[in-house]
Length: 150
Image (cartoon, rainbow, N blue to C red; front, side):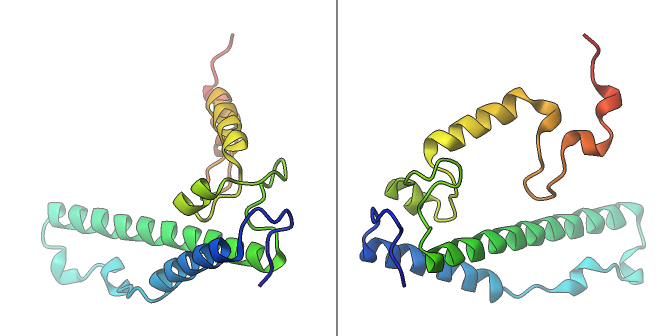
């Protein structure tokens, strides 16, 4: 295992974070996902409200599963960055991401300053916001026609 290029993380800190990342990944990978709950049984469709409730529950379960898969990708990316020796470096400014931030969010890719700047930029530019999980801009979803004319 290599240490970050700038050496601000000690091997003990890097090992601790790697253990956290691996534990999170294992937790997601070992979780039992009963896909039969996504399918509707004809016997359960006796009432419109029952059907709606089943659809809502299945939608929630799928959404949670998609979030887990998205997080799993981030975990794997962080573990790859540890292998390459670039873990803990901000992807925007190449500065160190503070150890406090990394312990709180081991998958952090930006230092706190770049993250705050990114969030402020996203907040101020509604039509260029990207969905974190889908990677589409709001304008990609045909919302341009709803844009107010000033």
